Length: 326
Image (cartoon, rainbow, N blue to C red; front, side):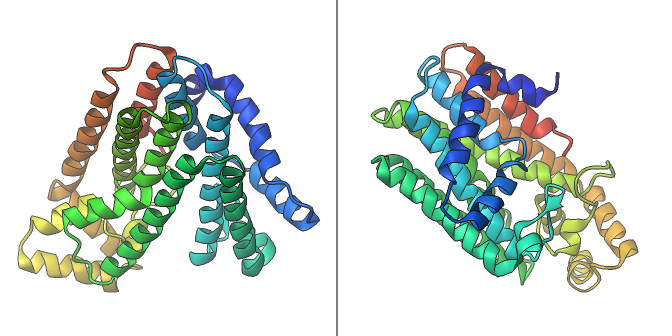
């Protein structure tokens, strides 16, 4: 059995019902919109986000979820999908998970409008049901994701990112969404228990940090994973292995690397040399250590919860994040 299916086992029923509710939450009177949202729903990924919501809720409430849990999972998926549709327009990307992106099939104007529509559906789903506490969690996440993207763009121009700024970028860009899923799950079943909601938010944030560092490491592996090696260097993205290497080399080496990344990022031989340089400076070893540190901190936060299938699945999930192959 695939590990993702194993993680899903304790929430199979919830995930099936969620899919139906999620699909219903997108419906519109406009036929074009329904065609597009139908296309979106049928091309879903691993569904990590709703899994975090349901596993967290069930672990805390000892096995029960409620309508708020389903709404929370739907809202986060609606808003996350909206940001992905907009991202594809921003990045001028024609593919998403191996399928054509919305903008590739229906052009940018429609893609932006569909993103706006999904965003409004997410907001209304919360407001119509007075889930203002859940809406706040999600709204903070969207704000942070936008700030993280813009901070990365601002810093990438100069290629002088410190490790602290890097953590701030990935905390906002990647970790904040997983943190929102976990705090949503907790808040849907135990809104009055602010300590537990905050603990699960922190848990999600730590996993998100580990998740992003794992993504950075993929850029330096030769495995046939989803993205070609060195693509982050080609896109001038500052990743943790590269930042560590730059902070631990001579001035001459540093200017060579920065020049390579800025001006020779299409030169395959040069990109290979940069990758080798990062490896020689122990950039990968350092990034792996940091990733494991975040993972261990996340596992620590689960210790006090009673043993259950849901807790076991969350632990599996944490380990899957850093052991996954793509």
